[in-house]
Amino acid sequence: MSAIRTAARWAPTVAALLAAACSTAPMTPTGPVAPEPSGPRPYVPSPTPDAPRPAPADAVSPAVLPGWNDEDHLAAFRVYVDGCGAARDTPGRAVCARARAMAGPALTPSDARAFFEAGFSAVPARTPDGTPGLLTSYFAPEYPARRAADAEFSAPVLPRPADPRGAGDRAAIEAAARPDQALAWMRAEDLFFLQIQGSGYLTFEDGTRARAAYAADNGKSFVGIARPMARQGLLPENGTSGDAIRDWLAEHRGAEAQAVMALNPRYIFFRLDPDDDGHPPGAAGVPLTERRAIAVDPSHWRYGELVWLEADGGNLRGATASYRGMAMALDTGSAIRGPVRADLYMGRGDAAGAEAGTVRHPLRMWRLVPKG
Image (cartoon, rainbow, N blue to C red; front, side):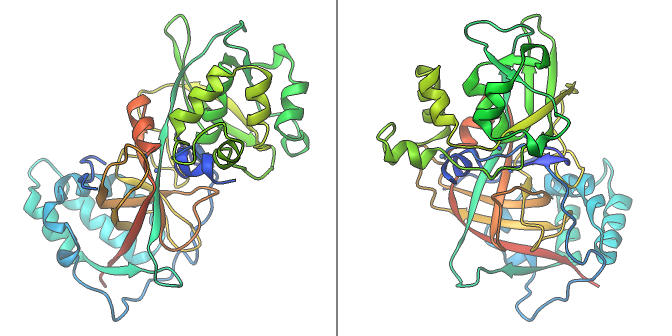
């Protein structure tokens, strides 16, 4: 749910987040959820950054990974070269240097495939009980905004206060907000989703654009609104996608919607940066690549690591059957916890958001460990 930046990413998929109380070449779709905070996430150091990871007995060649023959290895190689500088361990830096030395227009898909197969071993990641993990998704939203408030654009985008942790919960902050503090004005439901994603892009009435970047939060825990909405009969149990929640909030704009959004006490403050037409950086400080960057739990993964994803059997309405392919660990999120847990960055804009809201798939992951 940034889209995302180093000082501030907070989300697994929109769906996961809403429900909870992130590639050059797309992963092959074979096989939709409400949002979670997924905007820029705060930098969290990877564990023991300089200690090499030993290759365990169950390490295998990447060539035997499910779907390896169907991967676009050249596209994955280019993403790796762009992101491998985030690696902190000595083997990771060494293999990154080799990749950058061989990068160039003459590199072929076969060269890229041979680089991965010769330079890495694949090690399965496992949950404590051996069950599959979970893949969700996030994106960088794009929203209309106004310089001045009106009946529709009535929610202020607020800057970081002097004491963000002392600002109170969502309801208290909204009640105390002054018009002269606003950086911009948005529809209330759009601002709510922007805060879930953690950052995003704003287009003003004169056509100018800016990136709303995470600046701070009020320190409250995120509480998803999807399940409470289903329990209250506001939405059906299997109809709590991001789009369904947004539509309900828009149709009930005003006190009724505010009461529902207030169930989530967490509040994000922003700053406005220029829009460079690119993708936001993740917690590792590297710009994210659509469908090739993931948010992970930094207590189990290191930024800059290569990961193979195999996610089948999404059961949300409108879900793609599966996602499979190589990705890089470049981000983190408050709801991304565990050794087999990933949030796939889907890109920016409405189409990316629509797909991200449908991703909640059982997941298998392999760590690609540099050899020697």
